[in-house]
Length: 236
Image: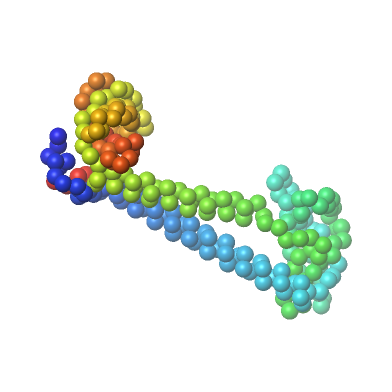
C-alpha cells in the first residue's frame, strides 16, 4: 500500500495545481459571466416593466406608419414611425406570433407613447412578449448555474472519497483510452467481504488482471475509485 494511504483518515488532500487553477478559473468565468448576464437581464426586465406601467397609465395613442418589415427567417420585429408635435419618432416591436398579423410597408398602425418621452412607445394592440433572445439567455443562465453547481458538488464528493475512503486491493477487468486518459474498470472486495465493481479515470494504462489500489466509502461502497486519482495529491 502507498505510504500516504497508511495513515489515519481523514487524509490531507490537495488538488493538483494545474487542475485547481483550471477549476477556479472555470468557476470564476461562469459565476462572474452568469452574474453579469443575470444582472443585465434583471435590469432590462425592470426597465420594460416600468415602461409598460407608464404607457398604460400615462400613454397617448397616435397613428403611426410601418417603415420596416422582417427581412429574414427568424426576424420577428417590425419598425414604425409616428409624429408628435411636429417631430418624427421611431420604434420597433416584436410581432405577436399567435396573432396572425400581416403587415406591409406604409400600413397604418396604432401606437401608444409617452408624451413626456415619445421614445418610449409600443404598438397599442400588441401584448409585450419575451423575445427569443431573452428566452435563450434565461436558458443559458440556468445551464451555467447548473454546470457550476454540478462541478462543485462533484469536486467535493471526489475529495471526500479520497480523504475518508477505505483502502483495499482490486483487480483490473478492463482498461480503455478515454479523452487522453484511461478508463479503468475493476472489481474489489470490501473489508466485510462484499464483491463490488467500479470504474474511474487513470493517467496510466493497466493490464487486465493487474492489481491496483481502490478507495471506497465504508457506508457507501458503490462510491469508489482507483488510486492514484488524477488531479489530486494525498499528502503523507
